[in-house]
Length: 222
Image 1: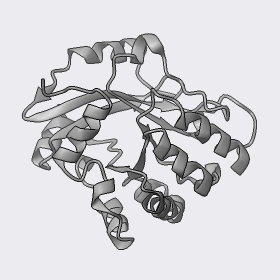
Image 2: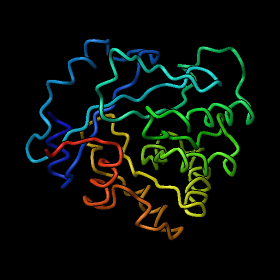
Image 3: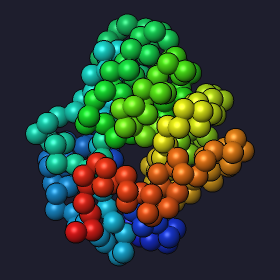
Image 4: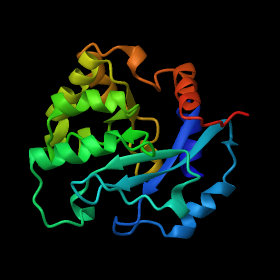
């Protein structure tokens, strides 16, 4: 409820709840995700999307999506973390490129999460257009400007390639506490600095976001 209150105070119309999938240490158990169905579609005027941040567990692009737990969720993010890789293979540009190319084709995934990490660098020029062709949104993660500062230059490069190839992005606070909800100033400044087209930011307006939800067959306002 704290996040919902914060979203309302920030003037947000939508809020996505996306805890980590099961390979992340400390992630919620299966009944947490199954129980998300009880959440009302709207609370205090804020529409709520239920979701999961799935972890990429190998360089074949496998994610820890659990059909029984996650099939009824609205929103699926895919992201790479050192702590959730189940392979001893060291990441290379080639292996990370392969992982993202496979995820670009995965119909379950909506969003590509914080993919600018230097440790997991991939062939941006090759993969970014495939994200677009696969209907994926590339996350512009405000939290990266705080906790992944070595990724900022890569985030800018990725955003420039999204601009070049007409690939849509979504600005996200990646809030780990309620006080972060709705505060994406650093991500927005970066997009403004590079002249990123507003029409490619799906959550730049309520109407654009509604249109994307329709594309994904997500109906919150019926």
